[in-house]
Image 1 (cartoon, one colour):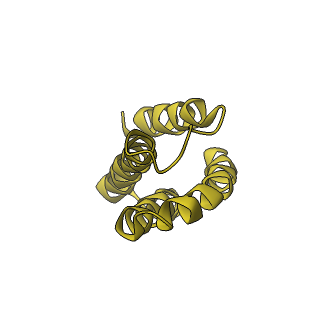
Image 2 (cartoon, rainbow, N blue to C red; image 1 turned 120 degrees about the vertical axis):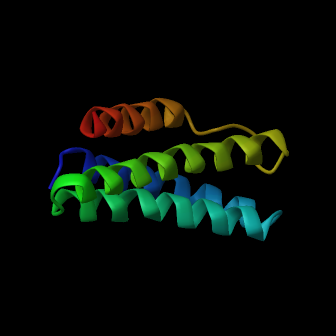
Image 3 (cartoon, one colour; image 1 turned 135 degrees about the vertical axis):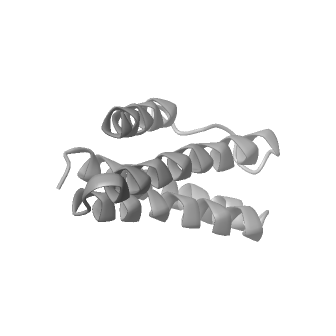
Amino acid sequence: MLNIYPFILETLTIIQPIAEQIAKRDSGLARQLRRASSSIALNVAEGTYSRGKNRSCRYQSALGSARETLACLEVAHAMGYICDLPPGIVARFDRIIGTLMKLIH
């Protein structure tokens, strides 16, 4: 398994309470956040054991889901559902996105 995988799981643990907070104001956005965030881990896990173009496709899906997850958090902040993004969360997503970009190219 890739070293980034446990880091992704840690990040999902950090944002879980935020998803619960968002759900109180916008259940649809919270559902989308949960689906997108779980998709990051699931696609990385699947890609790790795939070959050829399938591997790249899974990592590209994980990359899109990582960006979507961060966008959900940014939208929640912009809409006033959460006061601030947790400290370091953008840096965590920068690391995840950067790693996935390297794996794709």
